[in-house]
Image: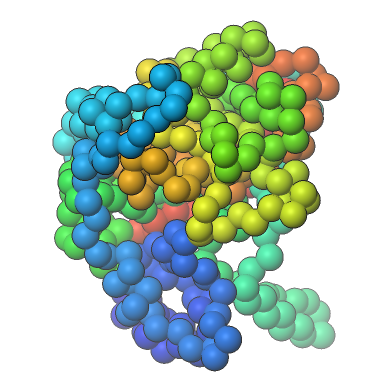
Length: 353
């Protein structure tokens, strides 16, 4: 199995023009998973892009702020250092904040189902490669894709990203991750699924706009205000889904890619930790550029707090459903594939009312 994975990276990947699945986590954020115009693809360069040293999240740069509510650089650093969840559930724990979803928590989430209305939070999955083979009695197909990035709805495993202090639990990525897969913090730690109470916070509706803008990222104190206005409390072990209006932003001509982009500001980190969130789902991710100079301003909750990340969620239909149902809480089901040593998984999250 390990040999075949390595051969896939070094041979099939080269012919695939960038559509291969990288065992070390796929495309680096901000680097396109699409093939270059020449059709060339270098798997080793892709892995090297992942396996370089990052500065620590504690290395926060001071930034001039016009809003007195913005935290100081020291406060931001303290959220990730003084309030880290490393060791909270044992030094060898690979579940992270999903530990907060006890069986009783899942059972209580099921009690939220009243009408049976189901809403998918997944974008349409269109693999970079999709080959069909037909016979006289049936059909089989092959998918080739890199799900990490900014297109496919997926869940990040705890090993997916890191900083200079290490990945989840302080493990070193060069020891825990090889071209054969992740030896620690892999997605199969969540093979039983993430089933809990879901809460959606609708930022555009609260602001009275269609979407979040680059000039006004989502802030932690704003999430507090939205929860209060919606009459919902975010509780330990919840799946927090933050709707920012990405699809409306794209319809208005906005560009959502690896460079500057609207999204969640670093002050949301405190909200996430204060409320002991188990999973963060978002349609817009970390706002860029970060005024504190952080590469992972909010993605850091993955490896510092153990919070599962549901990236590229389609939240517009769910936001509409919440408005129609008159409530912003529901049963949330995120069921990643049981991938051996995988750094994440495509997923079709379901909210049930």
